[in-house]
Length: 177
Image 1 (cartoon, rainbow, N blue to C red):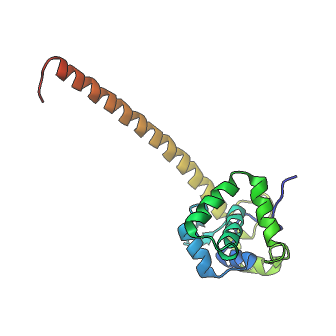
Image 2: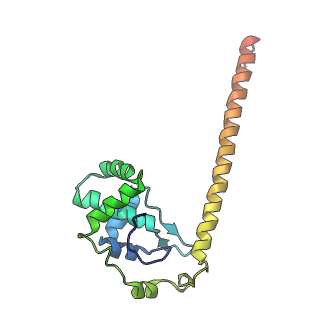
Image 3: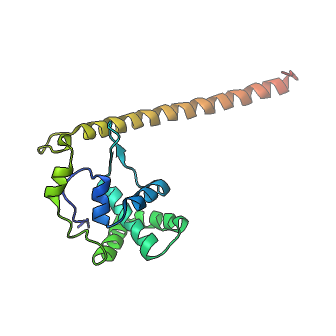
């Protein structure tokens, strides 16, 4: 059985919601976001940042590492990477240390959250929001970019091989360029 946080059932969360869930200040969230690549908010076309559940998990873990265990950012990065390598250990770490210190398990302010959500995110089951569509398009673009990057690396490798071949011919025939 997979362990998980007791969060409202939704795809995306605003920064204010993450701050309420993790019981942190907005400034601390921005600091974590600037220092840790594991926190990856999605930027909507209107400029609003939306976070996924995985981001909340990382924020909760970092809150423990930095504020409770008093670890430096560099040490926290290493520890976070170690914890995230095994999802069960990662979730156990978060849940065990957050059961008393934060309100994550009691957070159930869904009416307020629904009121806070922009109308385009209040959808019925099966419907996709503009943000979800944007995210899917962004992921497709990333896949295309990865394919293009792989092609560029392959081309670069072939050019290096060709240059080495040309250099060997020049050396063999004592041609100077």
